[in-house]
Length: 77
Image 1 (cartoon, one colour):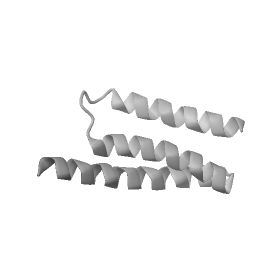
Image 2 (spheres, rainbow, N blue to C red):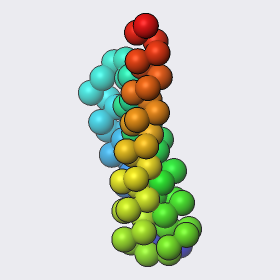
Image 3 (cartoon, rainbow, N blue to C red):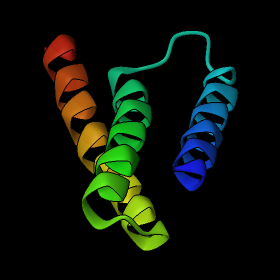
Image 4 (cartoon, rainbow, N blue to C red):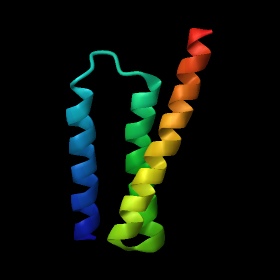
């Protein structure tokens, strides 16, 4: 449980630190951050290992980015 809290805190701090670089984040950027956090939590819950947490965060970031990018594309049309 302590590892999960550290992992979540690290991801949240990283995402919030990177979000400070942009004044108006795109949906793709928001989707990447939200997907990474959700995927990391889900990966840890399902697999219960560091590898599961990292894999879940990576997969969540990818899919969150794709959804956000799709939403950005619809906004441009």
